[in-house]
Image (tube, rainbow, N blue to C red):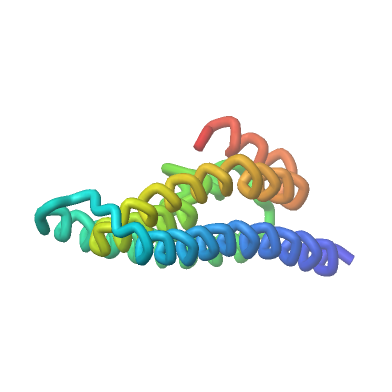
Length: 156
């Protein structure tokens, strides 16, 4: 019974995350399309190229680190608040979202696209307001007091 309940929570959590990632993707597609029409540039020289590449590398490391750390949590039987303070989760509750933000932002900087940069920030805000709130609620249901305590200790 407990395994079935955990699978239901896992499916709901993944569904919320999938919707959140879809928002990023749709905004990225729309912004690339708008950029092809209006061609508003942010930078006049290539000085921002190293910054964009840095964001891409940092984002990739952050996402991989978050995914690897998140899988290790499933091995712990009795969850306590300190179990959530691992890897990048000791700095933020949403490291994968920050990684996605940096990844698309880095692409926007390399591509020198005003619309990609703006839409990345907008999609992050939408995800934070709508999807992350639901994500937190589902994790609190799944892990109980341990996650609620973690959420109190780590605000963002």
